[in-house]
Length: 209
Image (cartoon, rainbow, N blue to C red; front, side, top):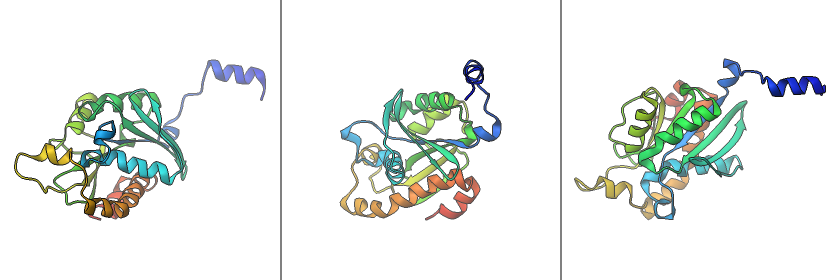
């Protein structure tokens, strides 16, 4: 490479065009850090991202405000983020990595648990309210919008009235764990589909499965 050209490019880097920016996607899996929470229902976002990273043979690296793994698939760049801010402060990490990677809001997908959906079911939506979920609530607050895609994985509502927090922070049952082995690859494929096939197609193919 010509030295003058390379030096010029270093001093005046080319701005990325809209088409180039649209090829990069930020996938956020919500959860709480530490062994205490590793196998809890609230950490399904982490689990789905772990499944996706494993399938692509990439590892997470500790970075600012979270663990991050990056890979390319079908011409798209995936930035997987597991915030280390704990669930209730997830928005700080999301905002930082959107800015750090220069990723537009239409290219982010937040993966989280949902007690209002049957266990193992998938529901991808273009937008919506936080629905009482503290992680989504903080993201909405930090981004000042609810106009971002979210992927809700059903954990069911098998808990007595007033015990929701204990339920989502509780560990999976043996029966649930055995079923997750089949559900996690499907969930990881839905994440890939979001970027490669688009939100609408992903909703049509995966919602309710």
